[in-house]
Amino acid sequence: MESGADDSSTAPVDRLAQMTLALAGFMLLLLIAVPFTVDSGPTGYIAPYLIYSLFLTSVGIIIGVSLTWLNDPRRQTRSTDNIPEPKPSTKSSMLSDDQRRVVELLAASPGSMWQAELVRESGFTDSKASRLLSRMEHEGLIRRVRDGMGKRVELMEGSG
Image (cartoon, rainbow, N blue to C red):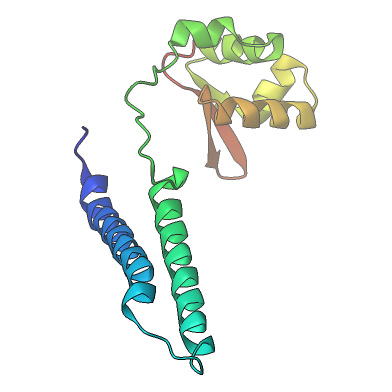
């Protein structure tokens, strides 16, 4: 099993759910045993029946909540260690023509240039360049840094 900071916070919750299930099992045993041990007279038939029904309902609710808690998919630990990082060569081979053009322009400059200059040299419209650069920034290929009134576009390492 993996050990981490997450284990210490979920262990008491697991124990609580297990104790709740054990308590529900005990209540179920009582539910089965009580009708055989309690003698009900002819006038008191409704009260034990109501108690029996409420008891059965509470046992069902407790068992349902416990099982739901134990099987909650949000509680499952996800291992991020097994997910491989994409290689830079894989990233560059999957670039669109427009992205490849931006990377070539940035690589030809000292690694960064003004966004307005990049728009002029690439021939893209302002809106197309902005959308393209936003997508590339989200993918981790470039970084845009606000510098005064404009933005400097920097090529991230391993992208070129």
